Length: 143
Image 1 (cartoon, rainbow, N blue to C red):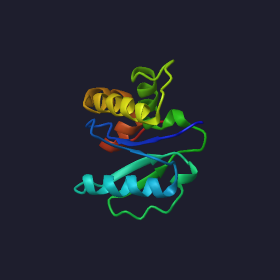
Image 2 (image 1 turned 180 degrees about the vertical axis):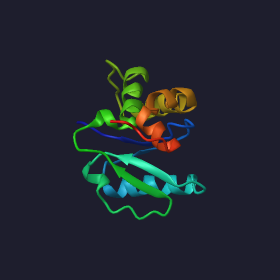
Image 3 (image 1 turned 120 degrees about the horizontal axis):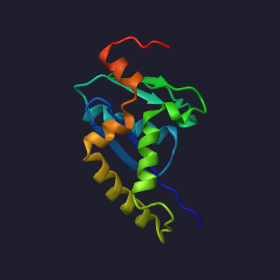
Image 4 (image 1 turned 45 degrees about the horizontal axis):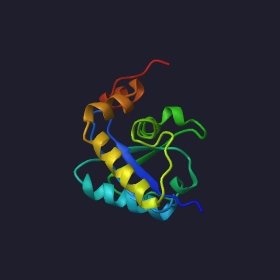
């Protein structure tokens, strides 16, 4: 039998700050829980949140301090968070490893993510795409 768990996360490429939750489903309800909790946690900030066009991202986001920025479909390479997920998969004890229980997966995930999220410089290096940093600073990007 297969069991699943999902890691939701958001990362600031400028400061290395981050927010993440492990939730049981990849759906609109869990996405809303994640965004609501992130909104409260960073209530003093206005956040632009890059999202792909996954079905659970398409719910109307009506949170005062969160502005969604939808990425083109089928283009994970332009979503900075995808690089964080790849790093966790490759460096978090998941590569070529089988877990006996979902609890073991979640425990390993918590350890790997906590270690990574404590390293703000690593978060910045994984998510600090030139176009993102230029957008944050207000510089124009020549294409």
